[in-house]
Image (cartoon, rainbow, N blue to C red; front, side, top):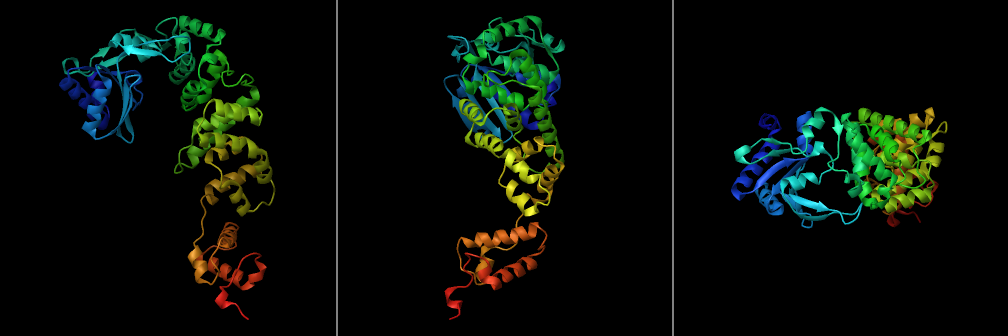
Amino acid sequence: MEEHLKRLPQDIRDLIYAVRDIAECSGVKAYLVGGFVRDLILGVNNLDLDIAVEGDGIAFARILARHFNSGITCHKRFGTAAVMVKPHLKVDIATTRKESYPEPGSLPVVSGGSLKDDLYRRDFTINTLVISLNRDNFGCLMDLFGGREDIRGKKIRVLHDRSFLDDPTRILRAARFEQRYDFSIEPLTLKCLDSAVKLKMLLAVEPQRLRDELIPLLKEKEPLKALKRLNALAGLDFIDPGLKLTAKTLRFLESAQEQVNWFDLNLPARRHLDRWLVYFAGILDGLEEPVISNICRRFALRRGDEKRIREFFHLRDKLLSRLSGRGIRASSVFHLLEPLSYEIIVLLKASTGNKQALANIEKFLHEYNGSRIVLKGNDLNGLGFVPGPHYQKILRKVLNARLDGKVKTAREELELVKKIKKQGAAVRGIPVFRSSERKI
């Protein structure tokens, strides 16, 4: 595997060699583990590095953080730490440990353990492969549970028959990994999974833990494949008892996926979409607004994420009705859509087949979004307008004129403002002249 490591990007290699040197100086054993090793074998890019240390993982992480002058976050309960080596490069370091589950679906009780103990607590064999980072056997692949054979055979296999009972969230991960790699869940694992589903084990898990597994599934390159598989394996009642993946919901999700892909293709310079949020909203389509609000609260979504989801469902019908109207002005389209997030706008596109609405939304994204005028408040002040909140009204009038094609240059904006000043009383509620300029 050393040859595989040599082909990694330079910053990854620098990090791995630093871990090797620190392990040597500290007299501990350190290993690359989990998904990074799996993807290295599969030839898949993965910058999420996990290091297991037979020793004090947190102390090891602190030395590594000092070496790179990096930030560190520690979780003493689990003996883990995260070091942000660079803005794009984070490494998770864990003390090798054993886990036991006081009751099914609960958080584990952690105690110190060997490398084999640490690997045995993992979800699937394909995630138990390790690469030694110590000098005496640097780059050596260690396979204690047949993970490499399962990679060759494209199998998702648990390590023991209580795996889904101990941690039911592994059901979501099984669907995700199976669909991502085009693998298959092997028969005994499928039998264990089915038993856990029949016992309704997912309902025994805290909603926040389910959220933390559902979001990565919805971030997959092809999330609908994983979602359909999850639905076939376990249903979606762990999100809400009344939630079903109906044909109508699937059509909406497929439309959402088309619009997400359209956005990425046509607007590559814009900020990246929170794709998971688009698909999560799609899953909830058809539920009543109070139910949607309750799901958002139970899953403890961040305030901004909950706001975007609720805002979409609350505004969708009204916005699409307005956007579908013939002759709607560009300025009206702008003021309808400019306050909204890209996720809401993509969901609006996915919700309609109306050509006028689609054209207006695309026109906004290509042309109107972020539109500004040249004039500022200081320009109004220089023209003799009394400073105050009415400035916003005047500037909005100028912006509307620019959006609607009535003014096109800074000079024309200035002429429009002069006209507004001249008309004076025609602009209700706007004090035009300073008191010293008023005629007696």
